[in-house]
Length: 110
Image (cartoon, rainbow, N blue to C red; front, side):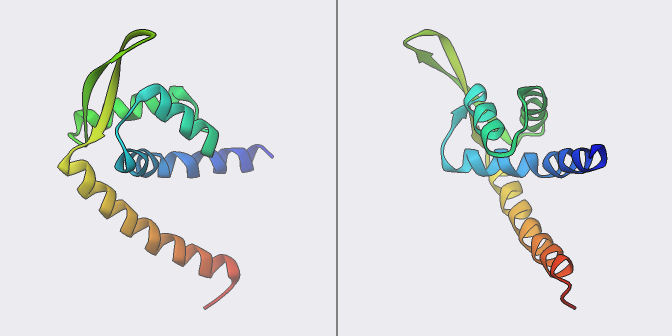
């Protein structure tokens, strides 16, 4: 069981950047909401997502801005930069090719 859990975590970590980019392609959002979405959809915790977003911002894939909140301090929203959109397209293409190949292998097709 421990090996299966480890494999699942590694698979999730491998696609996490793609998931963040794809989520932000639909609309800008703030970090807590992104973390909540990814936690709900693929079971990744905030502790993994926040460092990833800082790295992605440092790489120029994300830009941020503050939006006033009616119920507290301003929220930091994130959106894709031109480089982020290019990375998303590249990763989508890679994912589609990779997932087709894995599906063929798993189904036993040659």
